[in-house]
Image (cartoon, rainbow, N blue to C red):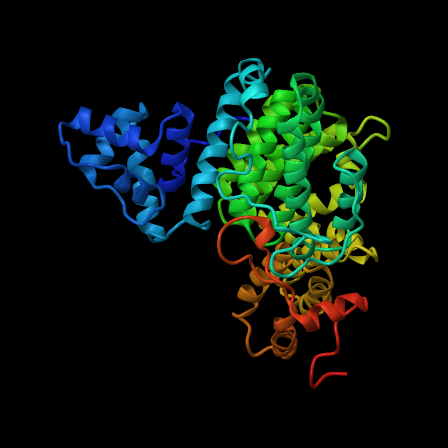
Length: 486
């Protein structure tokens, strides 16, 4: 069992959003309750939004009324305000559309936590899941062309398949080789087809199509996140959660929350990530397979470590170890990629985040050395490089990071670039090291070939077009040698 969150100070923005979501209130409702309780009629939802985005901090007057209205001790709000002030007020890591999608997903997750069976959610959702615009909220598929989806720039060709389990399996396998920049448009296109089929089906057909819809939305969310579009990913995950609950598939619903937790953890929101991971594990563990239970606990562990809750991270890692390895025949098909090597790498990643790099090196090195999985090698290579750097092993760290950089070019994964960005920031403190200078030169030469986040409005169909040279490099299985190097 995952213990409840410690009572230590939190940042104000995530705390207010979670307290509000737990009550099912909108920002407008919070503002109205504050006005009624305080007798001051001038506060609007815009001010509540600024507090949650940490653009501003409330003073003592509104802090006291926030505690009263939200039903929490005044010390909790005061400590959150104080901690936010010490760390500096900054906007959230996701854009406003992503913030709205985050709150919507947290709200639905809290509703599931209140009713783990999903009984109060499945009935209405089965009939009103997508009444008008099934991809409302920002998630838009790429426009269809003669060869499938395109976003002005057609993603790399992927063999097409019918919108069924077999087609999803093929797209998942392609996800082992290519990043979200190439596949997000295909994931959005497949989700659009699943939604269209659901809307055109009768009641019996809809019940049959709900699992396909849920899996399509989960995969589309994963690919959107890997393309650097967190807002589009969160919208797709919320759709996936609703469909999974309507289908009565609690393991898949738990996996959706674990995937969304992974997104928020990478977007700099460990508090939101920990909330989703804990709800997913608590609500789904009874019906989860051994491998899924272990994965859900690893999601909890990483979010807790990133939030500085190292004891909670250690407890979650211990629980994951007790869950055992994935068992063939008992694991769901969408968990085909999980094996003992991957679980060891997940442990190593959490140990790095928790400030324990020494034992992490032996766990991360084997998965980085496996050929044919460039995104996995790039992601875990970034964590391994950070572990070496924390141990003071600068040449080893830069060697690993250089290999991970080339794998990031091959994979086209924005998620992989995120870990290398963290490594670069840490390496900036050692500018005089020869290995650090060589890595900086390599990074400068490779920058044009690295994937960037999706620009413009949300939705994986808007993933950035790969640089022509980067596409050519990846078609040839590697990056061209940077100028000035052998």
